Figure (cartoon, one colour):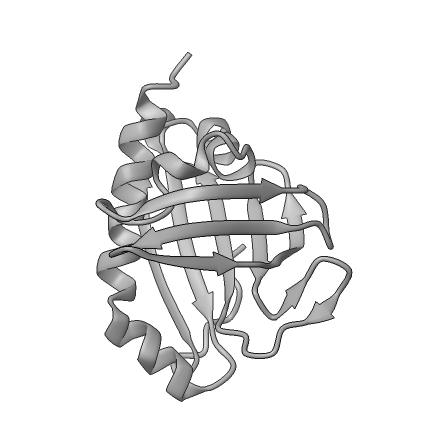
Amino acid sequence: MTPDLDPNTDLSFTRTLAVPRHLIWECWTKPEHIPHFFIPAPHRVTGVEIDLRVGGRFNTTFEVEGNVMDNKGVYLEVVENEKLVFTDAYTEGWKPAPDPFMTAILLLADAPRGGTTYTAIARHRNPDTRKVHEDMGFYGGWGTVATQLEAYAKGLVR
């Protein structure tokens, strides 16, 4: 299920989350959940638009240290409870973005004791962009997001 990774352009990490896979999926696919985990605290998500289908929008607005950041993107692949692929290379209607940053691939699989094996991959156009993302704190930032996601999703266990 894991795509071939190119160490020159891809960043990736895998973690086991102590939450069922369907809840991790729900958190990533319903707009009301995204603000609770999607950006490392104390930064905030202030807006979310989701049209969960290939070509549908995945737009978020962040507030980071007083700056507003709009992120517009689309879903490239949606496999329920297993895989989400989204990118900022295009916006809804397949309009090319002027300065794309990455494509995100989220892979979910069942883990022992009802948990989820969670893999996050950031695929970049070139090694320079990958390096910028790594230097920005990919591992720490996406790791914090995974920790926040797990803590938030535990509150949804039913």
